[in-house]
Length: 178
Image 1 (cartoon, rainbow, N blue to C red):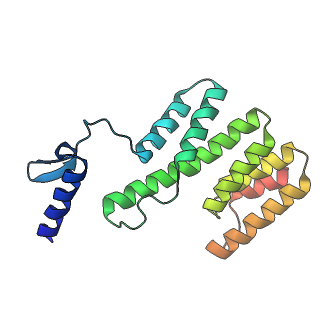
Image 2: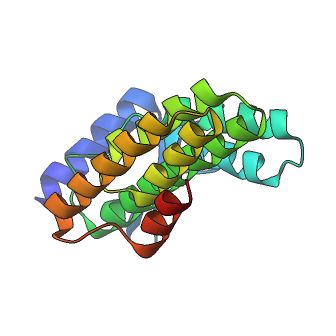
Image 3: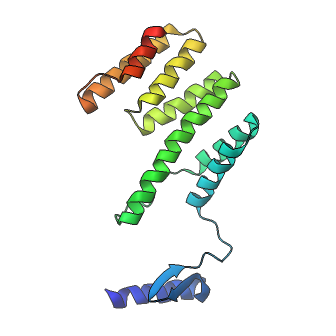
């Protein structure tokens, strides 16, 4: 296995340059001093820019840019611990960013865009109660009680099927107030 790895490193260095893969203290590592771009790092940088901006339109722009970069599960065929941790973090940041963008769209009264983003969150994570809550608030803001009812029923069915329980207290209370 060690010989195959060294052969792979040799081929990578030959293809893209010796300086890309460094060997220091008996460890191979990527040379982060190079000028490079990784989608996952750019995704997280755009989220940071969105979260640190005070201007709503700029926040929307950065969240939109970040969400365009997310292409699904990070390194889906790799199952090492470091990948699993990063995969989970990126997915959580993606889901959180979807809801934050939907809230910003609501602030700007762009309800159709907000609803579309909530749908993306629900499609990514079917039992994401926070997304259902926000979706119900969007339907309520657009005076659509049938939409509120449909989304609440969908939430109840998914939570019952996946977790064997009813939606959480916050979801039920929100539904009752709407």
